Length: 218
Image 1 (cartoon, rainbow, N blue to C red):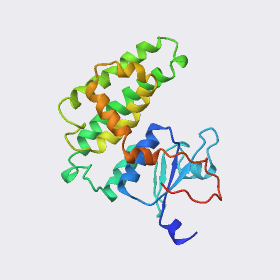
Image 2 (cartoon, rainbow, N blue to C red):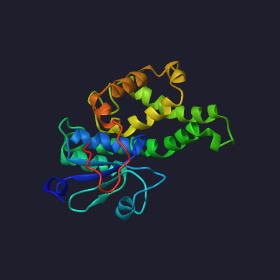
Image 3 (cartoon, helix red, strand yellow):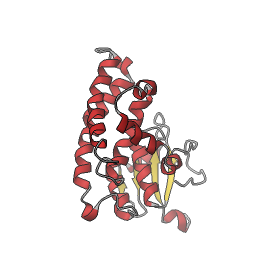
Image 4 (tube, rainbow, N blue to C red):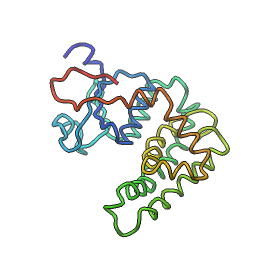
């Protein structure tokens, strides 16, 4: 292992996974050295399984061997290493309110999102039923964004990168529908994030990683 590899974080990812997307955004924003390993979730590499028993992405392995396998923990870890625009807030004042948003996003909204996107798997109700359930969170976010440019005020924060990949996925199910909704503030916020160089940079496509491949860096 060369000296560069020895000092580089290894990050197992799947490009379209919103959890992995959230973590990539934080790692890229923080400017940390990261070797990106794109994973086929139907053929998880042994190296990932050895690092984390959860056997899925995202998983970060730091140079000292520490394993962080929850996306929100990766976000917090990355920003605590380097936070150039103060996304954590003064004295980490944004962390608790961001945690509260994630409690909704990562549990009830994520469940609604999965039912809406994969409605064929949940025939108990029509797709519109699941979309309506998810809209409750969209309405809350739109109301917040009617009063401030971002979710925790007029500056970007970790709450925005925590939620953005999941809203993007929800909207992508039927963008035409979303564009006709009254959620004008949420739409503006989403479009701003979609246009960021930061987002485009973490969405570059890479081949599935195999042992022995030349390193690909985030």
